[in-house]
Image (tube, rainbow, N blue to C red):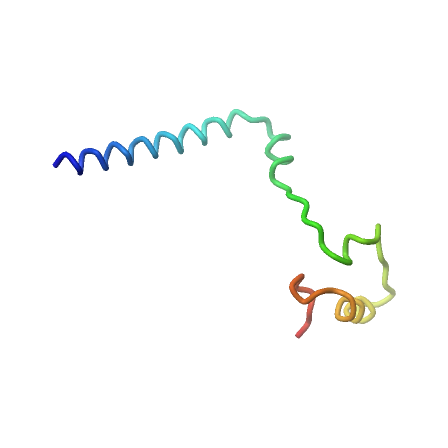
Length: 77
């Protein structure tokens, strides 16, 4: 019986902690939420030039196939 009560207390404490986190997040301004929501991850080749332009989609797809690592997910295979 004591163990069940102890586990119930731990569950309540954990739930209260989660609500405190939620309340703290709710007090933050939207600008901070937006700032914290985007994490920049360097993407090899894609991030190495300011921009690229292609005349056709086929050129773009060929460039992706020839230049980008498969793990970036731009492969058509």
